[in-house]
Length: 259
Ligand code: GLP
Image 1 (cartoon, rainbow, N blue to C red):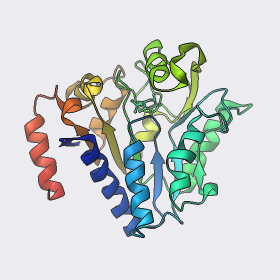
Image 2: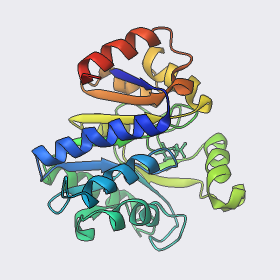
Image 3: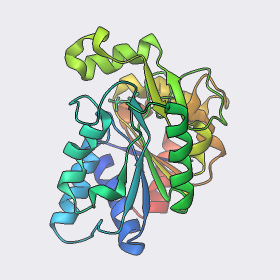
Image 4: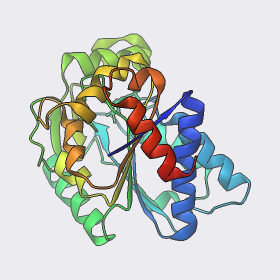
């Protein structure tokens, strides 16, 4: 795990976007795993800037998103499909038909999940998986108590995640947040060749501590990334503030990145 600690979230978002831009330039057929939430928004803007500046093209890129709320159509303004269209897909030259988000209205959700996994496999697997982290240490919607080898399935949100997501979305109304989602599993996520996680603010400090320096445990599903050998965590100083070895991680990652 490499932890890149930046002064600001702007800088962290730019560095993470640069890593993706460089990878897509090198392999125009990169398969991306994408995340929603407030955290990656700035990185997505930076990726869009690189497309506008003609530094890179996403014409041949395919993407699979981490998760979607059960019961929301892709046209619903709080669905993750809608979020991706607005915050990234409309701003880059990716073909919408090459982008994939789980269908929250699937009649047979388990079948939908199995088909999603099969699609990813057929595409050769995810080259780069983007992740945020929940304040309880979850990745995608894999809440505490989820097996670290879980696969894409129907999952159940904790009251704390429902509260967090209502605060930022759904106009603050907890009763409007769906209680279930379809989510890539922890095991599915860990199969990505490279993982880029973003975490900003002091509200993520405990989660990052658990992810990087806690024991590997299903109570912080992000800790499964400890067993992944190409994970990069881009965070600001507040999110990194509880890490015991933060100076060491900052020095090591900056050296590796040539910063
Ligand atoms: C949701 C998403 C996660 C995301 C998390 C944090 O639970 N399923 O993928 O990482 O929210 O969101 P934010 O970036 O808004 O803090």
